[in-house]
Figure: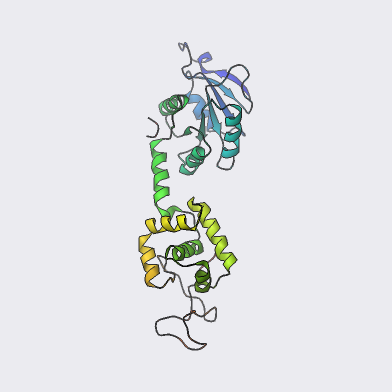
Length: 269
């Protein structure tokens, strides 16, 4: 339902709304929006819906969107109302959603699990043009940024990154892993996106910084894969190491089978 709703109309003794007019914009109404309305009761005049309130210019927009729609929704709002701060409201303390909120150019992120007092303080700070993110969300963002085990990479992508960080070229990786060059490039492109980097050099630097043990292992083994935990060997006949001199012959230090690797796989005050 779209329309103006003044918490003061329901709360006796409240003389004015400190936060002014807040536009709560959403695509689909969700149950956790009630937590926001409850927190702002007596503190603001709320306009709920998809259309800009015509009665008064909002002092703040609280946008309810997911990671797939934040960028487009925020872009439209910033284009039409560049002077009005935007804060993303989510159902829980989600670092990924908070990161998407900042990348979209908003003032920050609040969520339904915060106390009413925390929500009010955060929105008041955002109205002044400052960034707002709950402390626990910041901690989650930093943990994901600096711990590569939280990157949502496949085993193959990690293996290829390991070789890239060890200094191998795509051609050398092709020979090492028995993949086509296009497949290697595809895995690297997907890995760059997950890691938040733009190119091979950035990926290698970030991987070396966060997984030095694996890089040294990779170099010691001449670029062979040795991800933590190991992988079971493939049945014989699926490929012979490039270091084996001839069919049927086997170097005493090099197995004639390669690993069976499965593909796919406060900031506010």
